[in-house]
Image (tube, rainbow, N blue to C red; front, side, top):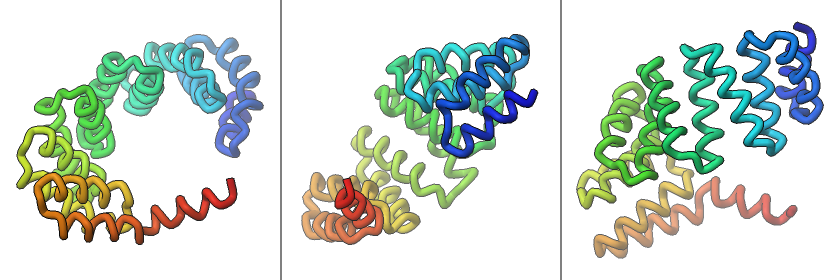
Length: 212
């Protein structure tokens, strides 16, 4: 138990490489106990060992099939490994287990949207916003879904709400500007681009580049 506890503390303090051998031993000593496998997966993922991380997350899912967090984390790892349909299956299972989690709903919807499964994605964006009406990212993602469906009125409405909720988001401002420009609303588009350039998010990124 102490190896598992120490391993998770090393992950928490940003030392995943040191956590790996401890968690490997903990997982070997308790092969039918899910948490050490999950924590080992996290440590491996954070050290760039995605394939091994997925293997450990898969063991954790088998041992903890009703864990929202384990399914979500495996979904993220699978997505980064370009195993998109497998990732979506675990996002779906996470939402089934915890349908009242707005982030889970948004994550599933965003994965579906990126696979061009727009009509499947929209109800999950809407569910996320019903659970958390001030969820700027979900408004922005739903706007993109409407834009992809050529429903530009709803796209503008949700981009505007996303920008109101997250006024310093560079990405939201730029995407909104792109849509307005596409619609021939050039002055409004320029306004959004200017707001994007003045945003804290953009300013912080520029400042960080100065020290690279």
